[in-house]
Image (cartoon, rainbow, N blue to C red; front, top):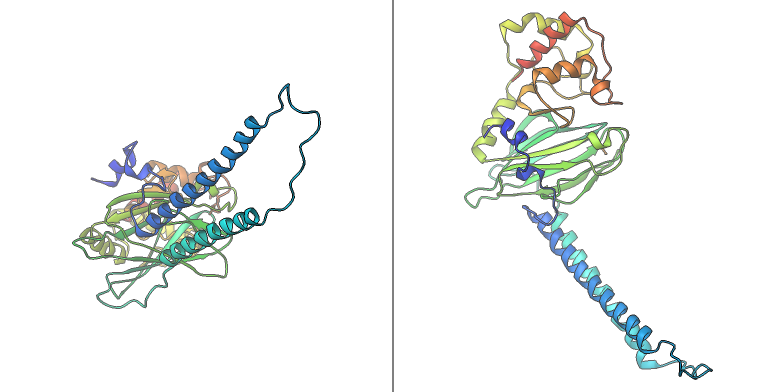
Length: 338
Ligand code: CUA
């Protein structure tokens, strides 16, 4: 199945954002905790409301009620002990189960080493897209950067393949949230937060920036693509390579490199070395544009470059007013970056 098919499926598993259908240990722990806390709260609610309504009905004012109030009762040691001890016990239980869940989901990553089958990626939240710096896999340095679509390997043949994310922000607070994989974790300027997950479910899992971060907060979508280990290895190999050289796109490349595109974007193997905007080295290997809001194709690329502000109001890329011919040349070059 190609990525296009996945995008086109209206009810693919990617659309499932339910925290009640977890596919990774951290989200499973969170679901268990949620159900337990909900059950305890529901029980307390039912008992308290039950007693309340029983008394409202049992002792309601009736026609033959005495005119004066009955004598009031003060104190009652056994009752006071009971209603102090019971809530204290309940709170203790809640604290213990929450602590156990935090213990499970907040793992300190071990140092990467060969044979660990673990993937380490640094995630940088930016207004309004996600930068992924692939650090190491199975102890080997990776050294490439991509955007918005996080590829990770699936657990297979009983070999766990853990994914450890270092979460940082380049500007304001964002929050990384793919509900079926793990809980929300904020990306905070000047601080590194961590999260991990592993899963044997292949496919695409959607998420969303979960902390208001400005105009395009809602347009800061997340896709985690869980590949088989072989697919993942092929994808890594592609990403590690330099940008493709297509002789047919020579004039477009020259135009791209001559324009201010290079101040913000990087295309590895060329003089474009900007680090402020998404790395375009293998742009066409991504399914979407602009942090997941548009399918990535020539037509949308053209509309995007013509006026990004029309496609995503407030985004940091301005419209450059290229002539149509020059824009087409640049777009042609971009479509060769596979
Ligand atoms: Cu980034 Cu909300």
